[in-house]
Image 1 (cartoon, chains in turn purple, red):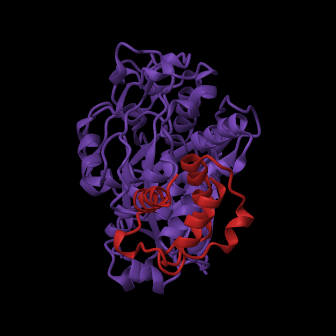
Image 2 (spheres, chains in turn brown, green):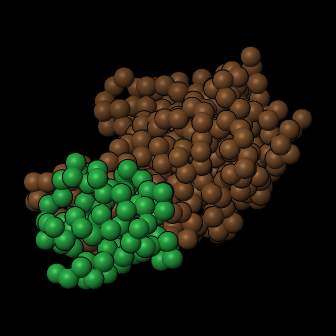
Length: 408
Length: 79
């Protein structure tokens, strides 16, 4: 079986806005979602920069039992999912009558883990942790909570693949639907934004310290980039077989044309050129497309010195001739990590829908590798029919996904 | 502590923490059938009782508590 797979609904809660409409405006306007969190200084962080996001108030949306197992990133994921299902015209009545699965990207849940261990060490009594802690603490917290809230009865697990987690989640759903094992899978990624979850990453000196200009701190591909800025939120996509989406009368957001993956088999944190190149080529092959058919590439580029260089070289190896327009939306969002694969597919689908390329803000002076790419530093009106989004992570995990506008 | 004070504290946390409607709360209200509590909620009740009344609850002792009056009796006995 080889079925066509589409995205029939998207929802987002990010540092660029609390829904698709707000995020669309921020992307078009090149708005930065980065700011300063002074608590990080008190905790001894090297960098105080972070994506700035407000916790949603779920009290009117979910009952106590539904809320009590949700950690911070689960709240964001719920908000994004509520919008995605609404956008996909899927309600609770449909979910009760039809099998829908969930594959969600998440790779940490620090606060509940820290708080429960602190409490047990202090009280020497585990019964005082309450009933929500265990469900908030596990990496699978989002998929387990959302599957119960939405009565999902299909595939149900979390994909943990570092900063490519949610891109791989979408890729896995695409495979399951393409080959007939599922009709609809809720996909996405959630990312906590609290300081405690980022201490060990800060300890690697991987974050930008451009504190005097938070909006200019994330500058992927720019010669003067000095590190990434941690960020987060929630991003959800309803991935569905074309026939199911048509039968339901859903508005199709985009078609998933290809998924490529690879592992560097190399250094745990330093990326290389070969792995991403394989992922890109595998994705094009799966989509049965040539590089020249890609109208826009949403780069992984996080604003780290080595990471952007390696991706620039891989992009140049594949898109050097076609000169596909490229930008990194992380210049605005910061690095949304576990959520980034899903959110950047949504950002790319928004650009395709509204015919523009969101800018790689803060790109003032490209370096010797990035100057060979067709990098888009200013918002550009352009009809986009096919886009590719890259996501890479620690351990050398790589994922690439191609989306096209749906046409019969 | 007077029984009425115990009742006030329990009713307050049932409304505030467990979001139970006041009109279903009565001395003979069944914790599961009437108040809608489930097994995981009893984990949280243990935490709240210890915090509010200052004694340690054993989960196995709670298995005989069926209606609110049983809960008030249990707390009164252990205070």
